[in-house]
Amino acid sequence: MPHPISKKASQAKIDYLIHLLNMMYPISELLKDEISQHLVSFQVKKDEVLVEENGYCHYMYFILKGALMGRTVYNKKKIVTYMSIENEFVSSISGLYGTNVSKEEISAIEDCSLIAIHNDVLKRLFLTQFDLNFLFRVMIEKYYTDAQERTHIVRVGSAKERFLYFTQTKPGYMERLPLEHIASLLDMKPFTLIKIKKQYASKFFKDRETEELCIAIEKCMVENQLFKDKEISLYSLAKHLNFSTHKLSALLNNQFEQKFMDFVNFYRINYIKEQIAIPGSLQYYTIETLANNAGFSSRSAFYNAFNKVVGMSPVDYSKSLVGSVERVNSCQ
Image (cartoon, rainbow, N blue to C red; front, top):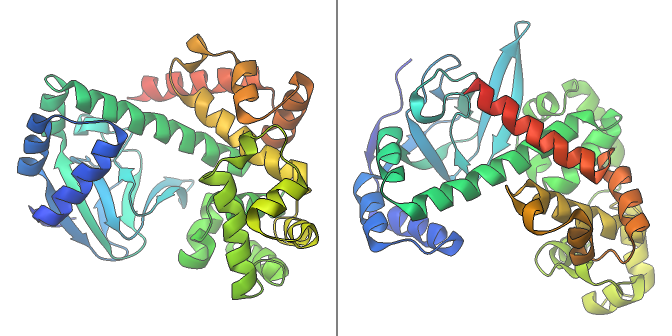
């Protein structure tokens, strides 16, 4: 199957990517020049395959617009292993650097505008540019965090729980991407997903006002990180949002299907999981310190909440991440 044709990336696309990279870590002028010189762009149509399963992945891609997914065949059935949208990097992990075949197909869910850099250029720059090594480390850390989330999605309880978890951790995906691909990612039949989605249609975002209120609540948790406030309460969060406590409680119960502290602890635990996933983080901070920084005021409350959300203890979760990295590395 022919690979989509590349062309030199426009200066606007180059500047956009360099701006994002520079926000992650200040990069040298030399690295900026190298990126500008070697960055290419691809226009990929919906359902077009970028990398075939058991083929070679020659690029590290960055999604400017659209959505890509990874798929693998098991028992003659195509299984979606991940989905990525704008402002995310995509490449083959099993076939990283193009030295081994990819165990996953990479294809377009939507029409995509991509920019990419060839693996040969990356390997050369790794030897000379420290800032690129640091940036790649950040990207790999994010990959393992996302991989852990994907693993968790298919492990947690019933199809209903997987649906609720997905809608909370991937807002907007359910309305945007094909349900058959989401169903495959969540390890359920499309009919089951459609049925569950209909059951919750009356509960999730009944109108534009409700949607905007829910987005405002999530923004407080994600961007403002109010969950770190040890004194947070239904009243204080409602006051911050300029809601009544009754309205906030109703939204949490009916839209998010969580009690207030369960809702807050969900974001605290996700924050802690992200910190644990950073290589070497536990050399500098104990798990209890991370819990304290995330807003937990007692050790027992933290451990109970972590077990409730993740299904295992923080120590076991940390060990599972180490095991996942070792297994991935052994497959490279």
